[in-house]
Length: 273
Image (cartoon, rainbow, N blue to C red; front, side, top):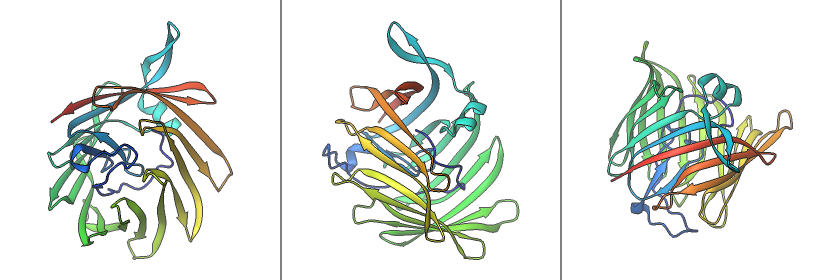
């Protein structure tokens, strides 16, 4: 999936939620969200998953079918603002324990190591190669609110902080960022459709919406269209997706189209509990 902007390194919290459209029970699902490239637009997958690997490729037309061609390299992903290839490992409760970003040679270049307690992450460390680049400490305010500190690991000083509010279904509601002085900066707000699926989110500053994303879904509950828009320059772009699925109902291949032309092919591998 395409990123909206390059945002601050921050963890959003795991959601125990259900997909009302497909009547999936929470204990039969895993959420791709926490510390992954999907942290602002969490995706629910079927079954309890131990590991997921996602890789992205340029499209290649072969015998009238769109296949995965050459793998995107890091420079191409940065130019396109496309999400990183990654591998995420989950514990048996569905919380991510490790997230690894991979380059085009499958070499890890960034990673999150997460410690979970009492059903949510309490701290996490971000590494670039083998050097620690960020730390987070997360505390629970109440059943629907979490606060965390983003810390400079070299000086052990506060870089910024955030407060995440969940709605009655424990889906993301608002995320307010603060600078190291405690002054509010960016704010994220999420919206949901009548089926309880993520309809979109906005990014605001000083109470003014600056950019956002909108989503629609196919009959299997997968994202079908993804609109990225900017209120700053008035530009927008819509990606449409077509999928292939495994026996569990999770997509293993996604073809992204822009202006009805194949743009990116993403492949996924799942290891289930």
